[in-house]
Image 1 (cartoon, rainbow, N blue to C red):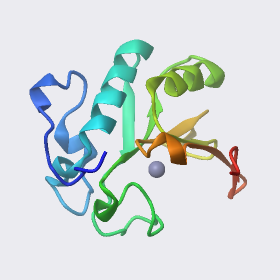
Image 2 (cartoon, helix red, strand yellow):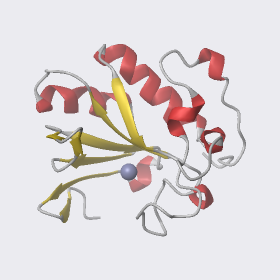
Image 3 (spheres, protein in one colour):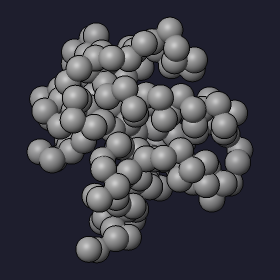
Length: 150
Ligand SMILES: [Zn+2]
């Protein structure tokens, strides 16, 4: 996972997403900076879960979208993260099951996202940090709780 700035994504082999879905909205075309592994993981997840996946945030070129300096969304950290929700009636636990199986090193769970004025039952952050940094977290009432401590 060292060659993060190299764009080696073959978009014609990505079945369910287009590069622009990963764009930083401030920088059209920036989806090309995406880490290839994240894109392949979420594309496979889309296949397995068999429901539409809506990407809400991916590339954050300069940290202009509220991500911290060490966020995997940032270009300087390799654009290795994607935020998304699954458009489905499946229970949140079943959705988490598929996301967990997808192979992300970091998974965040959000219960406070809205789309079109409606609360999303569960939203996800997925990233491809190394497994030596593996982490799972949830945000509840604005506070973050981390599963793994050492
Ligand atoms: Zn995120």
